[in-house]
Amino acid sequence: MNSQSLAAEFANRTSGFWSYMTREALADWVVRADGEPQPFGALPSAGPRLPGLIRAINDADAKSLREVALGIAGIVIRTTIPAAAESAGQHWLLTPYANGAERWFRLTVGMCWAAEISYFDDGRITTIFRMADTPVSRALAEGSLRAEDLTKFGITRRTDGLRTFAEDATVYHCPDIDGLLWFLDQPAVGEAIRLMNARLVATGQFAWQRSYDPDLAEEAWAAAEALSLPDPANLPIPPLDETHGHPGRPIPGAFPEWQAIDPEAQEAARDEHDRLMVLLMTRLNDFGIKPFQPTDPDVGLAWRTPDGRLHIAEAKSALGPSEADRLRLGLGQLLDHRHRLESDGRPQAYLLVSGIEDDTWPAICASADVRLLVATESEAWRLD
Image (cartoon, rainbow, N blue to C red; front, side, top):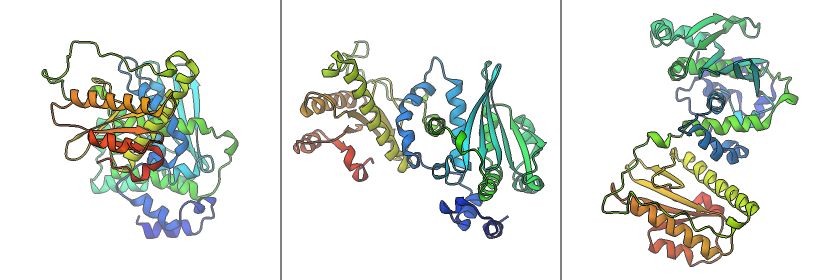
């Protein structure tokens, strides 16, 4: 199937979805081979949820199955539902279910269910997809997808019991995450899932607006981003140079600032800090850069550019006794972290702030080779 014939199929369908995407654009999206997810920033309301989900998913002691399963659901949403951010609650929704030891998230697109992600008390995560049969059958016949590989990963096929698109619909079950990752990486599989979901939104029928849970949708969207970020425990962080710092000596905590004696102020400052970090993550995502969070030293955020150079950033909220106090604290933290990480080259350092009144601070930071990032000027940030 090519995009022209698919656009012709969509031409006869009347749907509110055409306010988000033209028939031709939808057809091109179905047959494309990259399968890139819709950018994280496409659903801005999901941003504040990201820091907490990063902490939950990257918790080395107790990874949350729920958040991992939700992240898988988010990946499916962002890669296989057209204009997913714009059409949420109008053409698709995510619903939680539970039955004893099994809990699952069901993705409904248009008229019927499109995927289910189940997680069990014993740690298993399984997935089921309702998808178009034609791309998979064609790939199996051509040899670009092999039946023996499906068998190796325990992926099974069954007929679809629903009448919607029954002439070209099938159901595949993946018994674990390894099989799922391999399955979704197959171009024919991605096309088959996108084709089914495109047909479902093109029908224009969606009877579940009142059941749409925006909180769950936003959480899944952010969980997908958190799941795609590298786990800091698995990333090679440069070891401390024995000539720099004192590896065995406890590092003093950050200056307590004003919020240390006011729990409400402390919570407000933490929320503002998280908002700034999400803004930075979103901008990095726009450039195709995946950040991570080192733990030794405890840098706010880090990333590597294609040339291999390490970049580090700290954020300071707009809340506090004075702008100078916050900027001095942030600059001091950055200089400390940069010094401890210089063993494989001097990291580029960034200080991220909500806003700035004293216009001498950009020059102060520049003199220390630190880039000052102001939230209100995010479109002009240099992150390379």
